[in-house]
Amino acid sequence: MTRKQAEEIQRHLLDTSRALGRAGAAIADLGETDRQALTDRLAGVSSQLYFDLFEYINERHPDLTVWLESVPTAHVLSWDEVSLPPGVAESELDDLIFSLLKPDWRKTAMILAMASGRCEQLFVSLDIVAARIRALAEAGRIDHQGDLRRWRASEVRLPSSDG
Image (cartoon, rainbow, N blue to C red; front, side):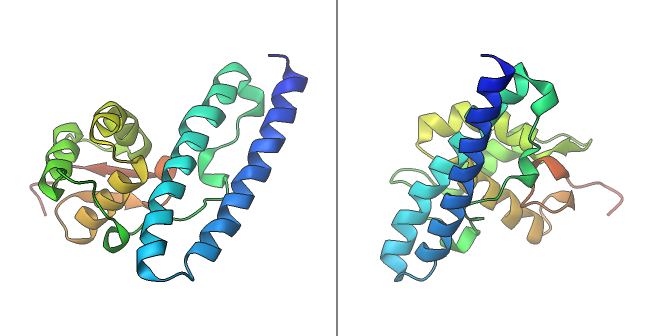
């Protein structure tokens, strides 16, 4: 892929991201059942856009890197909006997240990237795991710094023993 081709693709992806943001805003106005169903699906599309397509271009043309936290997000899922697939328990997500955390700070994006294989097996989007990480942080069960809605601009770790 040439730089010119990458620029064109990136331009289209940014347009797509803005369109997903508008769709997310429209979905937010729907009734609960439709909103949950569509939010979950939109979150999956957003994850692929950010983690697959933008990353592919970023790796091949670092000079064109679009920092993912600057990409307009379609919708930031909160834990109370999550509808887990049948057979997947909240505790299973907690176990996955805690298995990836260490006492030292790690980028939220890194934790999500490491969780992606298991997420595919569970049919759970990374947005759902990100929402669970935010819920764990809000409950004081994990330490965090930065805005957890911005995966590359925030960090998480196991709770420190010094409180």
